[in-house]
Image 1 (tube, rainbow, N blue to C red):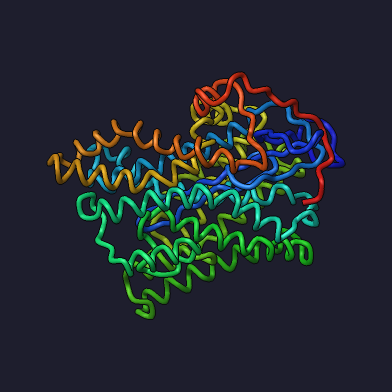
Image 2: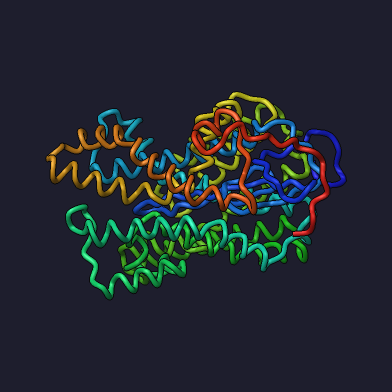
Length: 451
């Protein structure tokens, strides 16, 4: 799977693109989801299966099929759609009569834990199994900026236009010229998640990008820690920081040291130390995967996420509930990475894969569109919450069309250093008029250059 290992056991899921005459790079992804209370996370680069993000580079690896990559893309798509449903429910104001369905939809914000786990998995996988020496801090941040910022800044223009031009007519708060300048300054520099007045401004989903950059800044520290003290000690220390921080924050809130409100319930819990554990869970899965340890698990382990889900649901409302959901999604990722199994096949469904590939664009544009359409439906057309919810579901193609346009015009050019070659059914969805029989690349074992 990696350099020094043989066989197809370690085949890594990934999209292939040209990177030199006989080099192969695997692309990964970015995805995030915002909620009024819980942060959403953008998925990140992997040398094999990644969230569309930075380009990771793999060692000697034989890639058998795209099914495992498809599974990770499918996870990303499912999480993205879950978040979209969550925001449709929030802005329509509906309470679905079927309680299990209502609980599922209103829990869509929990998808952020999946994004965090996938981000940790994808970012660390190129350096797992003793390859931390390949990590180069400067090139890492350059690639991250090139991957994230173009589509983000384009969507920021859309969000600003909706806020300024639409204003009260579309349900957005009024912005003075000074407000616009301040919000642009904080959002352009990714520090908007540090302040209560900018956390949800312009496009509430953007807060997760600020969190992601905090995780990026911390990754070099984790790499250094893994080299000096060992990976498992380092990951355990980061998870412990998360636990101590969340417990201390809960105690501070209970004793009145932190005033109630958005600062206590949203901003402080969703800073780096408040969400670090989910990220390192993904790193742990990457290490086990790179070493082939996941294949030694019994088949029943593919379904360990089921009982863990019951535990996580029971823990809802507790200060550490996000850790339980992080465990659920880590175990679900294990199931998707399995060579066989129903879960892996479900998430490798091609339409789901297509949505996963463009999920970052979907994340960037969906919330302001949902918010604006919901406002018009409720206030201009006078629809009830239930009818607004149904109408917004019917208008999902509009949201996907805008996301598709951003992907085709901007994001696809940032997937790798060169255009990604995607073939088959997925290509027909993402590039119906932009590709004519793109040549599929053959995956061959190669020795990657140093990162």
